[in-house]
Image 1 (cartoon, rainbow, N blue to C red):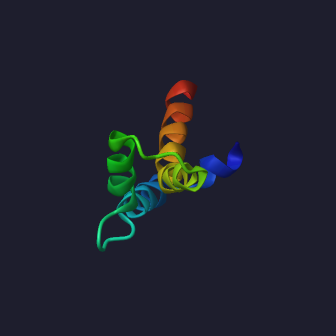
Image 2: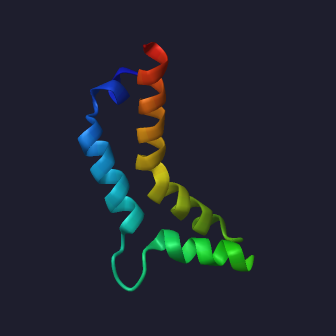
Length: 72
C-alpha cells in the first residue's frame, strides 16, 4: 500500500478534521448522523454511506498509523 505511505500525516490530519466538521453550517453531518443513530432513525443506506464518507480520512489516518507502528 505504497499510495498510503506516500500521503503525509499533515494532509491526512487536515482532511480528517475538515471532513468531520463539514458542512460547518447549520450542523456538521457527523453530529447530525450521530443524533439520528441515537434516536434510532439511521436506516437509510445513503445516511450510512454519508457517515463512512465523512470518516474515510480518519480511517486512513488510523490505518497509516497502525502500518507505520507495526513496521517498527
